Length: 214
DNA sequence: GCCAACGTTGGC
DNA sequence: GCCAACGTTGGC
Image (cartoon, rainbow, N blue to C red):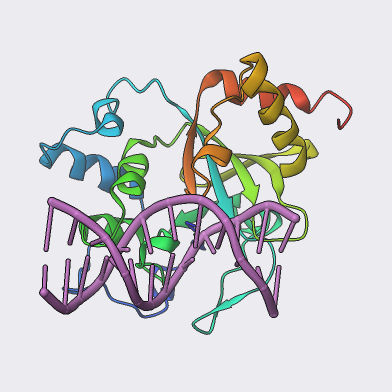
């Protein structure tokens, strides 16, 4: 899963130079992405939406518990995000797409190799002001912990933790009733670490905050 | 720790 | 360009 990286003086990045050693360290991934989108003629549903984006809600997974991956702890919970200066972290890579360590997303995306088209397109389509759920994965109780804006800036905690189990209950019910979560990517595309939500999905999930856990 | 799902790689 | 082997994700 994409993992936000602390935004500290650029030098921080643990090694890992991308293949041809790119130096363009954009501290604004979305900007880099947009630029890249411009130069690319390729049409994908995500990039098509780029200008007047309709799909403007996201779910981003991150791991809240310590786990070493090649010697690097991948832990980054919403509390960690909150504790960052400006409560903001830089997007630094998409984990299951092999460029993961320390690459800033600008580099990541310039290196078209190996980054899944899906992830690339999603990242490209993300806009700074868009909202995303911050999802805790690979942990004891997976679920949605908070709201962020896309560069990744903390917005607020969820009023209560919305667990995967609860979401799944609704998903299953909605499959038969045709409710808003019936196609939710968390369940239908389970390995996608950055995924889009329809407004219907987004607001339905937000509305769960006000209710008792089911 | 297990393992299903599914993405990627590489031989052919 | 097919597809088997392999690697990763991530819930359980």
